[in-house]
Figure: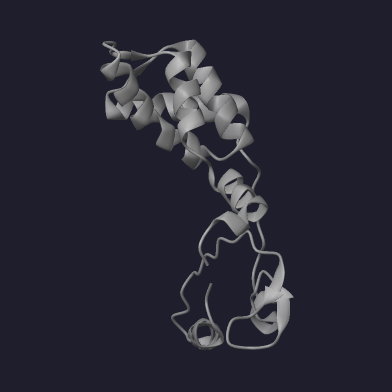
Length: 150
């Protein structure tokens, strides 16, 4: 969400003899460049956009998501069974990997409250019911906006 002044500075920096390597990560479509009335792809001015290489990334597959979650659980010292890991991976592919990773900690606490050290599928299902991912939250607010203060 850079504004026109930032893009101007970057454009000048790219012209110097010690030009930096700049990496932009965005999921924005055609939108207004901040600080202007100009609509441009990714919200980047066209003169700068002409100078970049666009590398499209793909979402993680279920197996990749499960592997990432397995590694994250191992790093955090959380024990989780395979069925739960698969369920959490499916949640991650439907929503986001970040959301799935964020469910690990409350699921772990829920398992411990219930006297277990290993997360089971019921813990995953219950935490998934307790929390909303960003898209579901935005959808709920849009549908029931009249019930919230403005």
